[in-house]
Length: 166
Image: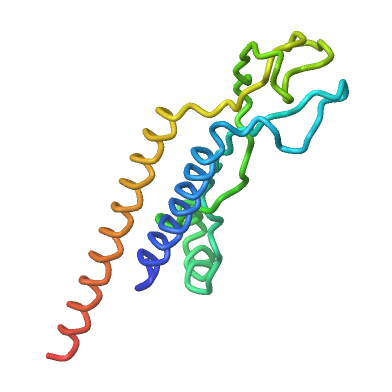
C-alpha cells in the first residue's frame, strides 16, 4: 500500500458523501415541486423525482510495482488492491411511484386521465422527508468516518517521517 493511498481513498469517500449530501438537500428543497416543465404524452405535469447517488469502487490503477510483483509471483492474488476508494457511477431518479392528491382546482391537476393518474389528481414528488433525514444522518456519519481515516493516516505518516529523522 502506497504512502498516500489511504488518504486518496478517504478523499474519494469525502467527495462522494458530499455529493450525496447535496442530492439530499436538493430532494428536500423540491419536496413540493409539482411542476418541472416536463409533460406526459397526454399533456399532464410530471413532478420532481427524487435523486440518489449510485457508488461503485474505483478501478485499480496499475502501477509498475504491482505489475512486477504479478510477473514474478504469477499469482492472481495480487490483482486486488484494498482501499482504492469509491466514485459516483451515476445519479439516478428514484423509481418509487409518485403520490397522488385529489385537487381538481390545481393548475397541475391531470386534465386527461391516463394509466396511474385519473383526471383531477395532482402527482406529487416521491420525496419522503423522513427518509431524506435518515439518509442525511447516514451520509454525514460516513463523511465523519472518512475525515477520521484521513486524520489517522496523516498522523501515521507524520510519525513515520519523524522516525526517519532519528
